[in-house]
Image (cartoon, rainbow, N blue to C red; front, side, top):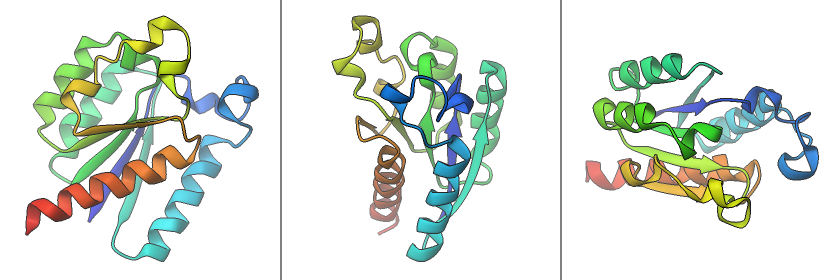
Length: 148
């Protein structure tokens, strides 16, 4: 099963941006850990894409449906206001699990608005870097249950 892990705005700064909130592990190290976990698991092939450009994220969503079975997406701040990415998720017509390393509902009120969540199959938040692993497992289970 092929799963794409998408990271959006500011996530390239993970490990250095506000370590008290986001931790001190870089996005590259998170991705390496996820890749090793998926290889050990044996039934998932992961690919990664990160961008600070909303249009590039939308384009990747569109092209993903031709290559991947599912997506795990941390859109960062775009989750709170991007109607464009919401529409791109719908247009992509592929299962997406939204992830956040922090519990967005325990943070500033503006982060409680989650425009993408309503068009994703689920959301995982608040478990640090483990949110990605939990999201990957969730989308894999979802895809597996649909193939039966």
